[in-house]
Length: 190
Image (cartoon, rainbow, N blue to C red; front, side, top):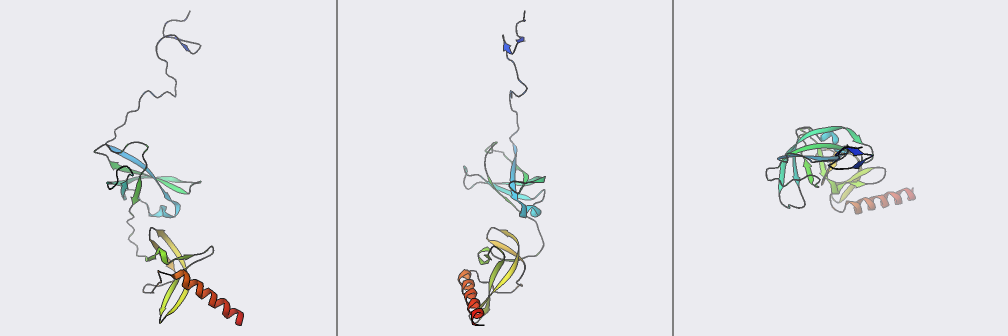
């Protein structure tokens, strides 16, 4: 006969039976939290361990947390094409809790000079990227460019324009469309 407190064919006579997948309790120190962030593949080379990061949460508008990059996962997610990064933030007021969503900014310490134009000045097509140059005296020219990092409201130009070139940042689509029509008419007249 089964003794008291012993499991008999998985029926509990008395007491509490713990399965291997039963969580009894979760103990964690929330004075510092880890945040898992994902960055796009094209931004991965800019991220470094120890980088300065800031974070904002939707439920506390206007409040910003300061932290540091802690660990960069070695493998890119093949479905989302993103790289996971672990960030650390102090949590003195215990306002940060597990499973919250946040918006983070990771600051790159890249010291290499770069040629930057406003993102609005880029005309992107399926096969090429262009900008419209202001040649002066009402003349404009669309030129093909090779883009580097595009982030926020700025785009890095690797080739196609030089420092000091005047790039059109407003109504460039209309200028580009007009130059395309003019080129088509010239080809028809030849």
